[in-house]
Each structure stands twice: as structure tokens, then as C-alpha cells.
Image (cartoon, rainbow, N blue to C red; front, side, top):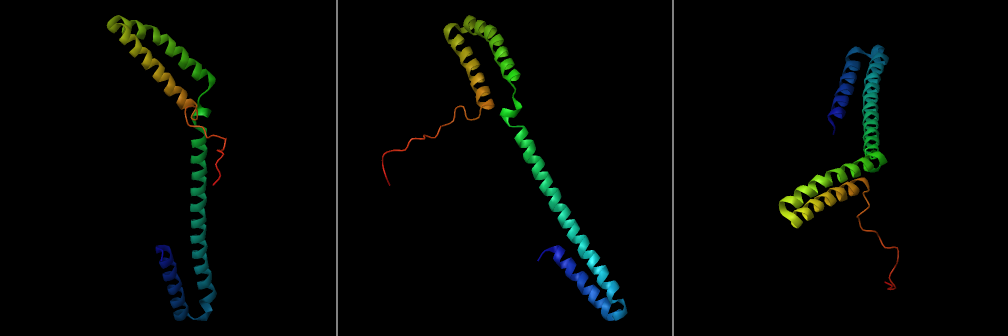
Length: 140
């Protein structure tokens, strides 16, 4: 039994006890008072449910609006590509100058890696497995 149910049961018991003590002339006032308390509890429960539902809908809307496809514009992707190429020049020079070919390859592996991660973030299904639409010839 819920705590609210026990409180409501106590209220009903108190109302019945008061009716016994006060007599039938106060019965309608006591019933009205009890029904008012029940209405308040129902209103509170409905209000909590409505607030919870609205909060869930707002959270879902916020999650949907923050999805990578909706958040990233063409300009952002283009800007990331330009910055990546601009930074590739000094990184290549430093890597090639310090460690020659292995340094150059390491610098470009990092550049490619960052761009792959960005591409995967903006296009979630880009590198995932694709389900084959062809069926095998085997029957179960």
C-alpha cells in the first residue's frame, strides 16, 4: 500500500469518526470536505504525470535536435576540412624535418584519423555494417 493511500485511508477513518461524533446534520459537510481532499490528491497526481510527460517530451525533442546530422551544417564540415588542410602543411614539415619519412607518415596518419572520426561523427551510419538484402539460396 502506498503512503498516499494510507494517508487517504486515515482521512476517511477520521471523517467517519467525526460523523459518528457530530451526527447526521454534519454529514454533507464532512463528505464535501473529504471529497475536496480526494480531488486535491487526484489533481496533484494528474499534474505530476502531466509534468513528467512534458519533461520527457522536451528531453526527447532536445535529444533529436542535438543529433549529429541536425547539428552539423555544410559550412561546419567545410570549415573543418579547410582547417585540417591548413594544419597539414606545418605538421608535414615538422614531421618530415624531425623524423623524415616515418614522421611524415605519422603526421598524415593523425590528420587522416581526425578526419575519419569527424566523418563518422557527422554521418553515424557511414562506417557501420550494412545489412545484405540478398538472401542465400538455403532454405530452413
